[in-house]
Length: 207
Image 1 (tube, one colour):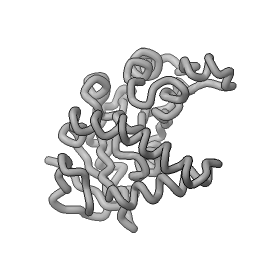
Image 2 (cartoon, one colour):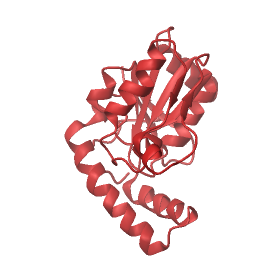
Image 3 (cartoon, helix red, strand yellow):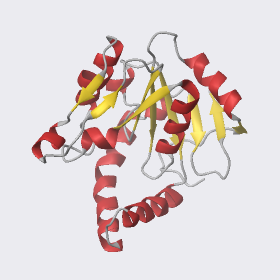
Image 4 (cartoon, helix red, strand yellow):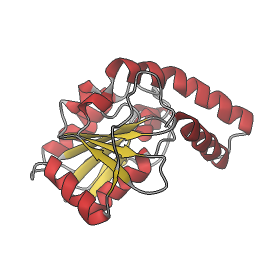
């Protein structure tokens, strides 16, 4: 796997079916309104894993991209802590309109019903230290950097960007993402590593 130089590759991988994965995740989380953070690089498979985890645990997913939309690519951790994790921990329903939504008149809100079992927050930097202190477990989705870039460019074109616009957006985002991850090293606090670019679900559990 081709990784960024500061990120070590997991020593070994093993497949997990849904039953095994659910049991592993439940073992990482306490019983009372737990918060699971799913971090990884752009195009690496974070959203796919987060949605799988939420489905297995009876949880709901909040996407960092929604908090960051027209706000800041990486400096959204305060929004997550105050307006998502905080209310969730207090037993409240999350219903939040981030600053970019208000400024650009985007409809709707970031929502988490008060009766779900687990809050899953996913996004680049979700497992950073400032957020991890308010959560119960971090998952790091490890990905091949070349394949992740290829996926990300395809996704952005599908969303309506031209190939040139997709390249420019990727490079702009990388300029914010890479220093954040290199400095914070969220993979070091992850209890579970997931192979996000394998053809089958592979995980590495730290003991």
